[in-house]
Length: 466
Image 1 (cartoon, rainbow, N blue to C red):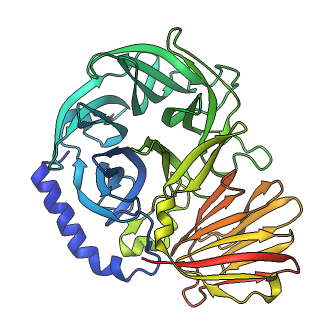
Image 2 (tube, rainbow, N blue to C red; image 1 turned 30 degrees about the vertical axis):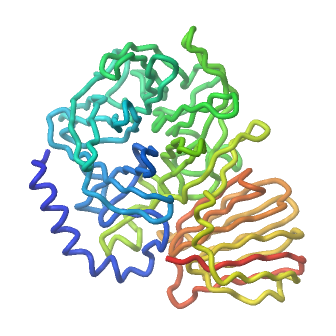
């Protein structure tokens, strides 16, 4: 635990000591969100209020390891230019002694209220408290303390509250692990956000058609979209099945109908949100335009983290670009928000055989590619995109093992939309019907995009401003 003044002073000292390394780091994102210093992971508390988008995030400002977490805080008018504020939540109370873990935000009576998990560890176990806090207009936070304790029948792994309002009541979903080591989503109801009634298990392993489906479910998010109720969550402990569940942990969703009278949720099969190498802990918000916007962590817990090339510069991880969600034929589609188009410059358009397309600068760029199958796009010496008659293969050189690894999408590719930053790539296939997000760390002397193949393709290319 920390005292607030000591914590702020330590953050400022860390920033001052590390700033020259950060500014000089070749891999630092040009336009994606990253933390000022230290380790960033889950996006928290996404909310749009009075013209500002608020993005909170899990943050360890003192190390590139998963230590005691605070909530970093950023705001933006346009989802493109972000301003860092002082940390919103820091672990200073007994009920959050080992970190202010992930949660959400909701606007009530024109004020933003924050819900988060107070994490407490013992020598032989742990517990969790779901806590409430108020965000003041000056950016300071007033903590109201725990409002939900650990329910019976569950381990200390209960966390990540996502709150919403329906009718006259408020509801919250939580990621959980029961005493039989099965992953669950549990939920509660309240009329005042302080007194909560346990409603049971909304979804989980051995429920609603699931068999054994992971030992822990994290980061749930439930929202209404186009007449359906969509539940996002991150199951841990799934076994790879052909090309599915290829990463260490997964992030995905089910689509169904939530019955508030019977407290039941009937839903379809689990579908992965992103087929790339680095995507986890997504959270959504609805903005004042009525758009459902998703931001995810472009990383994974425990995988390759100790080998990230950016650690020597004192920082690690970034967020995905903000994405608008739509429902189409029983699938969630993701598209970059239109505001990102404001970064475009130096447009180049070309129609020719892939072999005849000249190379383009890779860092920081955007492409839309349409055409026949059987061509390749190579980014520096570490990323290779292969488009064939079966679908698309994304190949990446692993920065830990230095060997090539791949992720696959199967289908007919009509359009490929590519967003590239200093050390990340996001592929949007067929207007967001599928997405692949990945980090990469290229040779600093080789920073071009090149095309290969005999296929005729149409290319639109932009540079993206910082």
